[in-house]
Amino acid sequence: MNAFFRIQRDALLGLQRLIVGGAAFYDVPPVHPCVYFANHTSHLDTTGLLAAIPPIMRDRTRPVAGADYWDKTALRRYIAHSLLNVVLVDRAKGGAEALVPLTEALDQQDSLIVFPEGTRKDATLPGEFKSGLYHLSRDRPTLALVPVYQQNLHRALPKGAPLPLPLLCRSHFGAPLYNDRGEDKETFLARMHQAVCDLADTF
Figure 1 (tube, helix red, strand yellow):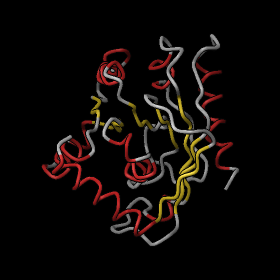
Figure 2 (figure 1 turned 45 degrees about the vertical axis):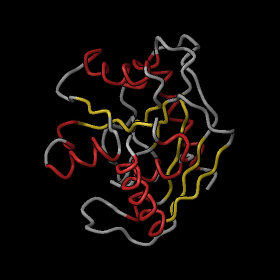
Figure 3 (figure 1 turned 90 degrees about the vertical axis):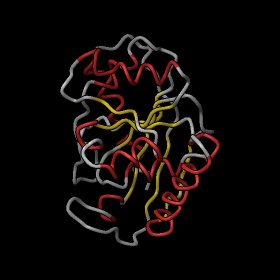
Figure 4 (figure 1 turned 120 degrees about the vertical axis):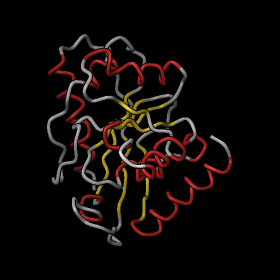
């Protein structure tokens, strides 16, 4: 990322922190590369998580999002490609083909931000996780999977709200987990889901 885009990105993240806070709590020191997986309740989730990550790691941390949304307008494309370095996924594709951009980013030693619910949910606890996290990590037993719980962002900018409210929001990063137990998909996803729920109980 060049300096011009980095300044704009950090200004955007700084503005969010000014309005809604963004304190970060880590159970263990941050690791890189990794996959951050978090609850998804607001359009502020991606920038909130990026703002909570140590600045030295931001350039190599890439949110994952649907191309159908971020390629829809020129402004969204600019934010996704130039400021946030988003890994865009074609949600019309399925299976391994949809994961190719993610695996390529991991092969380049980038970290990823994913929201396993797949869509925003207006609830305190995350909804059911989709299978992408399992398939992404199944053949990577040493890939660190870092659970994150983001508090209050669904209240600061709920669905349909035009502007964020000045409410204190926080992110809690748990210890890394791994897909190294030979679990079936359902068992693995239940363990990942519970890890995020456990972090919610700490606030």
